[in-house]
Length: 531
Image 1 (cartoon, rainbow, N blue to C red):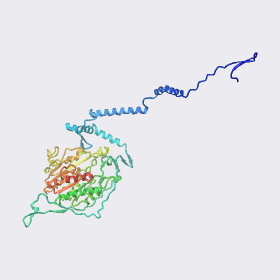
Image 2: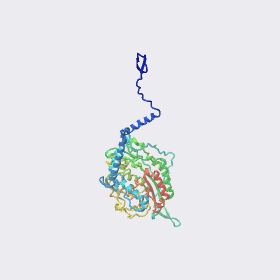
Image 3: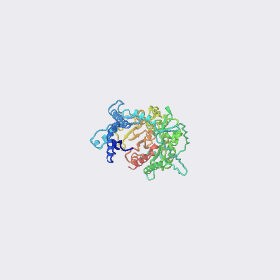
Image 4: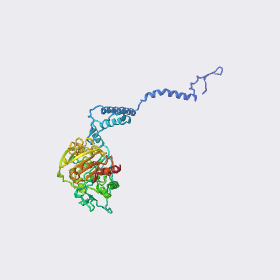
């Protein structure tokens, strides 16, 4: 086809050509223009894209909401705890923890600049939160939702399986220790004789403290135990019992024995020295499914006795085992009950060869509602909390002839010498109730108590103990003429010098084995000897 449309002129044979209208073609953009066009389109679309996107994503909105809710809740709780008394007034004591709560600090410019005043305020408000007992129970119930189960045992704390060491007496040479029954500072006419040169000579009476007795086998406890907090708990209702484990091993026991041996070396043969680690209730009532969770306390006490030199080892496990069916240990507290302390102290009295009256020579005082420390240690287990102990303690018939003087830990007289609340003798706090029942004798540990008794043997007993020893002291008012009760954890003077100053004839180290044979206990016993 031709490029031009037209018609032929037949007369002239000329072709009259008419040009076709030009096609409209879009000119190709130059390379420089293309980017400009692209940018123009992009700029045109950007505002519409931003308009479609929200300022926060859905997830971010939830996070912001959570932050405001949490801050609001914290602020509201802070106002309630600091100002309002709707949840209850601020208490001065904690029944479940058996302790006094923090007091509001006294202001002074010195304490303010040191930071003690502001720190004291923080401690006060933290320790005295209204409704603290209710919150603790809730926390205990909440904590029960965590952990895992192994069989019938609920685990929500650290569970330790320990090596069970067995004491082997083969190759061990047992040396009999003789007891000096003569007074150290005073003598009687019967005790003195005249020599050829006219001088007086004191006669020392010695008796062997060794005796053999039938070993009582501790029966197996077939109950299923569970670990709650740091406490093993088993049973139900009034049979619910909490147990504290012992992790003392032979090496620590040997260190304890060596520490006591040094006291004997310092005091010499005129002073009888005794080492009596007291077993915990777990030595007798440990459930069979958890029996390897703590060390064997009887074996450890035997090991300690084997390393003593010139010191009388006292092991009361066998005597306590004879009375396991009696109330010798608290179910809700880590201490033994006074009845258990009576049987244990009997073992010591036999070793010391002093008088020790039968239990029927004491007056009994009974109190209900003793809820001890294991309620707290078990993270407020309701089985323990709902089944408190019955607390029974004993007063000797000669209690009216007993008198006490109280000193601070530096052996300076306290004012008043007999603390408010004690009975006529000054030995018992009869008003103690509930979780404070174990404070019925001697009260605080941070003091030195001098006890004068009607006993006429002129023997002076010094006791270095922890709180287990408190329950033993009332049973010795017929055994020694004078008793000094000291806690090795709160003693600020030289212990050897103290013994010499008061005319000590007998020195007893006693207390819960888990504490007195620990690093802290051994260090304390060493420190008070040389300070």
